[in-house]
Amino acid sequence: MMGGGSPPPPQIIYPPAAPPPAPTTQVPTQALASQSALNEVSGKQQRLNMELGAQLDRTNAEFFAGQDIRRGQASAAEQRLNIDKAGEDARATARVTGQERRAEVGETGLQYRKGLETAGAEDRALTRETGTEQRKTIGTTGKETRTTDLQKEMFRRYKENRDFEQAQDQYRT
Image 1: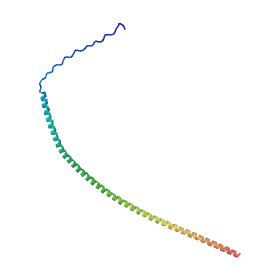
Image 2 (image 1 turned 120 degrees about the vertical axis):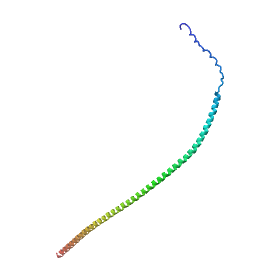
Image 3 (image 1 turned 45 degrees about the horizontal axis):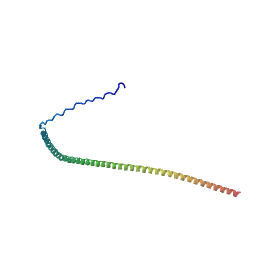
Image 4 (image 1 turned 90 degrees about the vertical axis):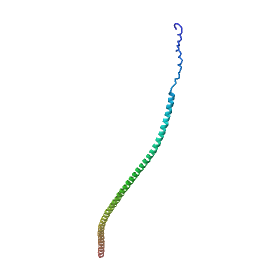
């Protein structure tokens, strides 16, 4: 520290005091009376507006109730027409479906009868062919049986004749 001591304290300067407020002076005015009259007129206007609004609401309610009734009647009439049209369409569809079903059954029966005719013809042809084959087989079997029986008979006679001849030969000797 050089020279010696602490710095001096800061010096505070206060602003001068404010002057006292100016005295108020009452001036007579019509603003209060005008405002009061205006509020009264405004209240009457609001009441009148509310009465007219309520009357308009009642009128609208009557009108729109009638309007709703007419709308409902129109909607019901339209719905009845739609139901009638749907019924007509359903009946037409049922009619066409029935016609198609009958035609299908008729065609199925026709095809079935043709199939039976074809099957019958094929069965008769098969039976005829089987009969022919069986008759041929029986004929062949009979012929072979007769041939075999003839061969057996001829062999039996041959043996008998041989035995007879052998017996004769032995008798002679």
